[in-house]
Structures are given as structure tokens and as C-alpha cells.
Length: 133
Image (cartoon, rainbow, N blue to C red; front, side):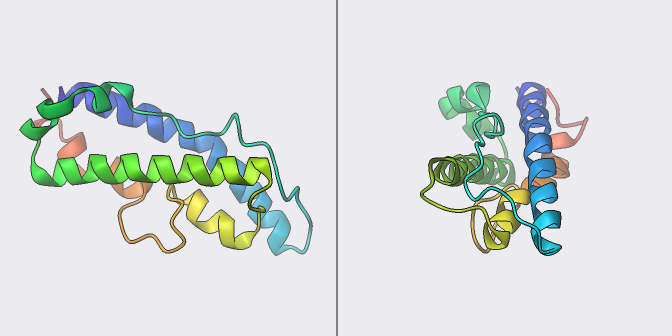
């Protein structure tokens, strides 16, 4: 089960690569005084979901509490990021330097208080070969 969750997390992390590069380019342009579209289409940059992990239901209780916390934080951040990107794409929010920072760190929170994608990728409980089953 842990090996499959890990594979799904790698897929999620890989999905953030394109978004991060797009946001880095926009941040560089804006920081240099340039301009970018206020409402870019992020439909191809949406974070990937975790259908296998979310379908496990009560089987997730077999994981250690820190592992459950990491997965729930990831799911929350995915949802918030998807919402924020959809709002920017639809014109409800504009893309600016204040929006880019939290989005480029894998979290749509304005001040992330929980682990972002970097912390999730390096979490020893998720990626330990000894704990993979």
C-alpha cells in the first residue's frame, strides 16, 4: 500500500513541475518590471489528484499518524491550489507576485503553515524503503 501511495505522490510532484516553471517565469518577469497576463489559463497546470490514496478510506488508518497528516495536508493543498488556479484563470483573481509565491511552493495558502510539496517529497515516513509494503 505504501509503495503505491509513494508512486502516486511522485506523480503529484511531477505534475507540479510545469506549474512551478510557469510561475517562476512569471515571477522573474514581474520582478524585472515586466508584465504578464493577469488571467492566464492554468487548465493544463492543475495539480494532479490522488485517486488511489483517497479511495483507500479506512485503510489509511494503518498508516502512522505523521503519514496520515502528510497525506491530509497534501490533499488540502492540492484542493486549495486547484481553486486558486481556477480563480485566476476565470478572472476572479489576478496573477501577481503575492499570488505566485504560495502557488509556486505547492500551497495556495497566503502564509503556509503546513508542509509544502518539498517537505512531502522528502518526508522519511513516505519514502523510506524499509516502510514500503
